[in-house]
Amino acid sequence: MSIADQLKQSDHCFTAAELARLLNVHKLTIHRHIKAGRLKAFHVGAALRIQPSAAAEWLRDRGSETVQ
Image 1 (cartoon, rainbow, N blue to C red):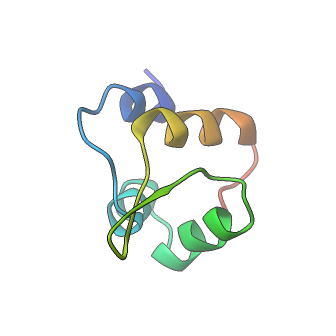
Image 2 (image 1 turned 120 degrees about the vertical axis):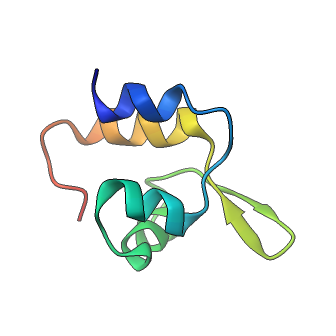
């Protein structure tokens, strides 16, 4: 099972820090992808949340490319 499939099966939305930890990248990398419009996220108050399906789609769109 790919990491994208594992993310999609999650039952909660991720923070940028959680997703970064799972993907072994810095949370600012996640924020850059959100700001560039490549990764969909939404606000809960001042905090960003990423739906599991959006994270999985983003990873699949990247294919064999690196996350950074």
